[in-house]
Length: 257
Ligand code: SAH
Image (cartoon, rainbow, N blue to C red; front, top):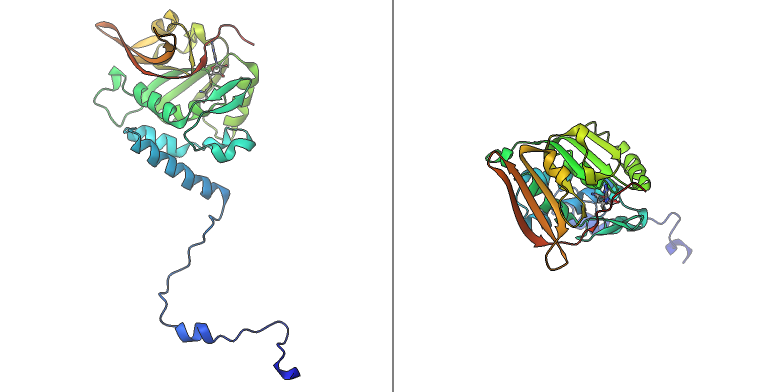
């Protein structure tokens, strides 16, 4: 009887594998779990990009930029699992990061600036972003524009964006603390101006600081009391204004806090 007791460590008889050996295809087994968290986020981000394309984002420059920037590194650790969902997320001080679809849509509109017409592969020139927030959109913009000036009125967020962006080493992104209602004359003229906060109207300063051939994309109060996206083009013929779909952005406020 004692001889039938398994020894230690237990040896399993290799009968099953011996029986099938030679018949199984010799392919390496794919791990079910990605090897590193960054590989996991790459896969989730790729799915987000597929979703954006299915939702109608067609500009390959935008899809590539959205696929490159690691959105999960910009949100609070408690929200990391939601970073690639189509949802806006709190970034502190009562502010929010827009959902990926809105970020992509607005940047796609920005790249439709008259100066870039017929140049589907080109980068936009200097861009001004009003409302740095956590710095995510500034990072995305750095992949489609030659230079990004991003201004934030809340010191806490300005500093957070600085920390968030440090590891990305984006030499072309310039963060400023200030009131973006007056634009940022030092960087003007801009090929594009994009606002992440909505006011009653597009400030005249932004139009003044826009280059000929440039475009402004901004949420603005609509006639019904809600908000809508406004696109303003500056051409040799003058200013052209279009009102597009309804949106929900945090308010554009004046002064620094
Ligand atoms: N683009 C940001 C989203 C930020 S939310 C991101 O990717 O995270 C909008 C931001 O606009 C808020 O941080 C708010 O403080 C800021 N804001 C509102 N009015 C402003 C103004 N006049 N000047 C600069 N920033 C402003």
